[in-house]
Length: 116
Ligand code: FES
Image (cartoon, rainbow, N blue to C red; front, side, top):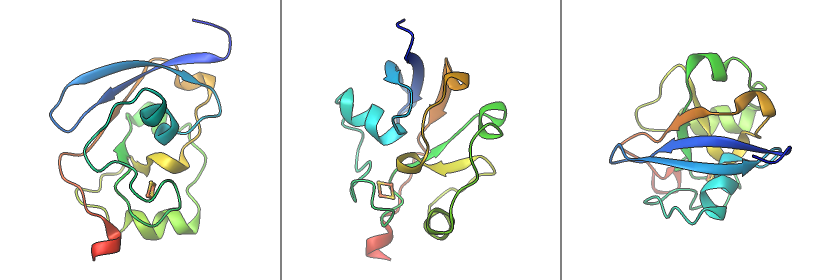
């Protein structure tokens, strides 16, 4: 693992684990796109905070390391299906080196806020 790369494990909607090498300062959405993971309907608004399909669930310890969500993200998260205490929008979370080896889980169900 190079200095500015970390490992992120992503659990897809079927429960399958994908181990990826990710750049610090990229978003979770970037990691999904860069690794061509093609998760069903993930990130359809391309990071413009208007869909909530990039909803992901963090582990407690990692969640507490993240910057607070901005108002836009909170509004959009409210519309996400299966919201948890450690839910965030993948397009709004930037990777830091402390997140190395963390596991990020996609909820099984998704809502596209543009359809609500
Ligand atoms: Fe649409 Fe994140 S990609 S809100």
